[in-house]
View 1 (cartoon, rainbow, N blue to C red):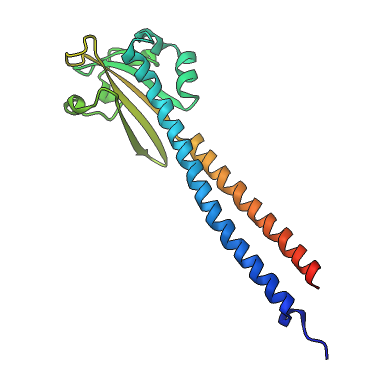
View 2 (tube, rainbow, N blue to C red):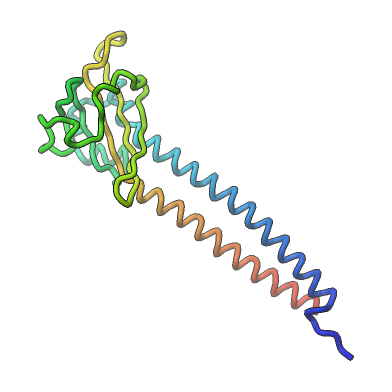
Length: 193
């Protein structure tokens, strides 16, 4: 009487190999997906901080904030808002000309009382706005090193593209793992039968 393939030692060995491979791929996939996500987050933070840092160091003139091509080159196409406002909250320069002269509180969720606590390197804030996430950076712009800043740079960007990139990486790894498991399983079945 012939034993069924499912009860055979070959099948059990093949199944054990496939399960070990699945666990290994899941662990490696989780590690690398998280690693790539951290890299994407780090790049997003670097991009949102760059124009404020350049303004604070004097490498970028204040009026360059009014030029979308420069701002989008520095931050990316996800840039939603960029402005420079005075310590009393009035917008002096803006990516959107209609915002000049407006109070910053009408555009950005900022409490002017907290500006004194912002470190010289700037502060990044992540905000949930409706169904999406936005990232903002506020950087003090000091005219004289030891004096309190009179101006602040504010940049705000969507994170939709970064989130899409993270999802794309996870999807690619998932389907690659499925293909690897399928190829390995088929090979094991053919070799052991």
